[in-house]
Amino acid sequence: MVLSTLTEGAARGLDTLGSTVSSRFFEPTLRLGVTGLARAGKTVFITSLVANLLNRGRMLQLEAARTGRIDSAYLQPQPDDTVPRFAYEDHLAALTGPQPHWPASTRVVSELRLSLTLRPSGLLSGFQGPRRLHLDIVDYPGEWLLDLALLDKSYSQWSAEVLARLPAREAAQDFLQVLTTVAANDPHDEPQAQMLAAEFTAYLNAARQAGFYDCSPGRFLLPGDLEGSPVLTFGPLPPADAAPRRSLWREMERRYEAYKSKVVQPFFRDHFTRIDRQVVLVDALSAIHSGPQAVEDLRLAMGDVLSAFRPGRNGFLTSLLRGKRVEKILFAATKADHLHHQQHGEMIAIIEALTSDARDRAQFAGAETAALALASLRATTEEMRPHNGVELACVRGRLLETGKQAAFYPGALPQDPAQLLSPARQGATRWLEGDYRAMQFAPAALSLKPGDGPPHIRLDRAAEFLIGDAL
Image 1 (cartoon, rainbow, N blue to C red):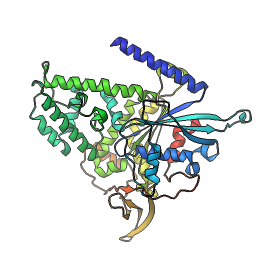
Image 2 (image 1 turned 90 degrees about the vertical axis):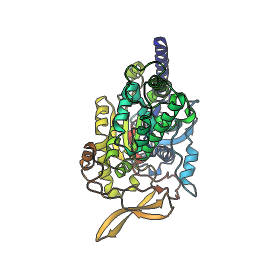
Image 3 (image 1 turned 120 degrees about the vertical axis):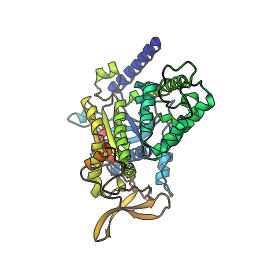
Image 4 (image 1 turned 90 degrees about the horizontal axis):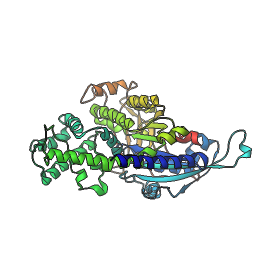
């Protein structure tokens, strides 16, 4: 075990050395990680970002685009031959075709390389030729990111934490009922283990649908080719004292440890530790619509997300000696187009408050963080509508379920985020003031001018924060 660990560490060190030297002295590469929890819009974010970097007419807040420093942008084969390519062309066709629809959500790790040719700037620009920057965009499910917290927890710790929060959740009642029929010290029985894992998986799916975010292990929700394997056939059990060999507890514990070593650690080693910049997408509007418990759960999940990163500055020597660290982290509240622009300030204040603890820890470690509200693809228009003598700031779009056009008023967000976060932290089950609603819109039909990418809200500001200094 020690020799294996040392060998893997040495291999990672050599890989880091090669990539660091290459980036410093040849054509630099910047790896941008994109993640988010369920329905946050990762696929749409990447598709729109790439489309708007290829056609930069709407990227006025990206200084290199506004000043013409980006001479050209083009897609290239990615360097990781064993990682699926992000299906950019298919997703763009889904969003901009004659019958636009949302593309399929992220289910596996994928990657895309966008190369940018940059004109020189500064006093010596006349003596320099153009340079090239490779932007490697890595897309991965946020549910897998939350799994990294399991690496520091034993099976008994994880079971205790999961079981402590289940009694208050309606979605967990079937699973809790199943637990009453099993005993941790009983001999292991495979049909019983499969039944327990199936009920636990059903709970995780129901909890995610209800707006909760602490739904790990993430591969239970997105199993891929591991579906039905023993490494995904376990669940939490009440504590057992001196569980004997071949008992249900010991087998569940063994499979939990196998999940960490064979699923979570390879993801961390092969993908996560190589990221330079990171954007975490958050569907805060849906959490607010789901109620105080979902908002508090989202706040805690953001802390877990940040604990998985290795924030800090990527100096040359630190990259060689310790491996890459995440230099910049952007927390972005998506679906800003579901709100009239009059409420965008309130939405930004809420996402800043939700992620304040996580951002403070990252900044203390030397990373630069930011929070903003954006819409990767604008699907609505704005209008004012009279109602009971008051003008309501509404958005109009094509409803996802019916395809009909409708105007929607989501409710007025509070100017003080504490009016949402305080009840959430105190365990409130519903909002005492305010009625916050969420509507699902389909993408609008587009007619793009030459040189323009898809319409968005603040995507250019997000790009300036994430990669502007590298351009």
